[in-house]
Length: 364
Image 1: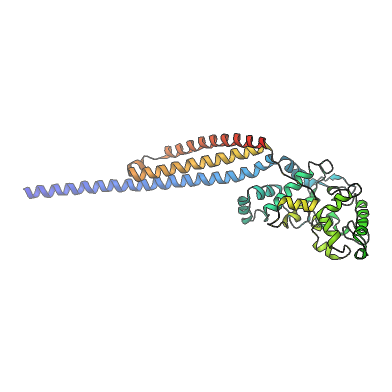
Image 2 (image 1 turned 120 degrees about the vertical axis):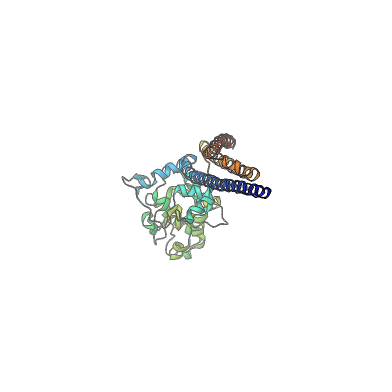
């Protein structure tokens, strides 16, 4: 009898152990499912945040650089009128230059280089160096705020081809805008400058870049001090194809500002490139309201993602410490809690970052 009781007790104990093991296994499965669901939720939320941040950052550039984007909005509808002014086009036109950068691309390449490199890798954009992008921004920012050139930048200046800018007139002989004549090789520097000065002054109206350089009629020294013009005078025989093929000035007439930007070298800053092409110093200043908006977006992004990641790590650590029972209690309500706290952190981070950025911008 005692033996039977012992057998029955052992059987009951085994059944209890099996039951407990079954419950434990079910809870382990539940924890695994919960962990996987939470992981998918967090990864999906972070991916959505990144996509949203990239999209919003691109769109915010128009607010940070209003002068540049006002030009960009109208540039395809404005062309030179052949008389030194501009005229409107009822339809959008296209530049014939090889490189066709956009203003959004220029801003991203200058200030968000990794993002631009990523988008270029996906073939959304043509490759553009930060130096080239900075040159484009400086050019538009400078000329759109100068009394002599405000409103005169057009599609042809941005990315026009040789046909659109009458590039063949630049070194034509005789009478080319930067040509000293067929005998320029036998002339002294002073004689060459005299002929070039006369031809350049006569190019007013047809020459789309006339107003963007010093006028030699009133500022002869400044005109011949512009490095890319000085290069033509000193280095090239202007009645042969070398000047057209190798002079840096010619890029402005065969591809516009985009062509110059595409040729930017890594060792040359955007300021140096602008100085070489136009003989001026130029800077780019962002609108403080736009800077604050961008900082708010960045702060919200970092705070929200940081909070979400921290809560995920905390929950994972709790699961390991407390076991399956704690994991099973994490449900959709827990996910909602992560979302709420992350949103709250994003708002707080956005406000704090925006206020700090605005103060720094005003203090410049």
